[in-house]
Length: 162
Image (cartoon, rainbow, N blue to C red; front, side, top):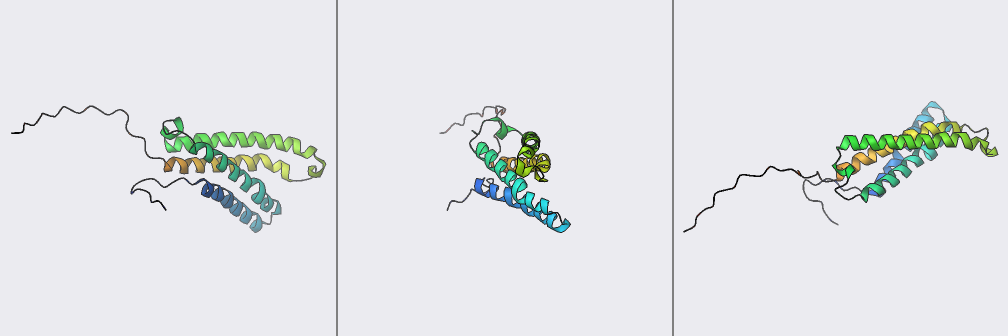
């Protein structure tokens, strides 16, 4: 088992990120649905909310892990990278949810289901949260970029040895 160097950032472990990305929203939304008596929210928590979060965390985390150290997300400030990727994931989730909410009710088995109208909100929100947290944690696991523009130091006088 390898140890990390003292002061080094914690490692980014993808399977752990995906597990947490599924479990946390599923548990919180499921508990919220159980407490308020909304069985559709409990079902959505275990399927669309938790599943979307896990899928976004797995896809984004795998892509970020492959990034070379000198590319844009590594050098971008942590909060900005998390916000931009979270907003992009929310936009993609909303577009997917709107398309699914429009086309899924045409399937006879889903015509009377309350599930398709929930998709735009569920997919957009869980995508945004998963992308933001995954990016934040990934960016925190990267070493800080070294200062690229160092000022030259004054030449030191040579010492004479006798």
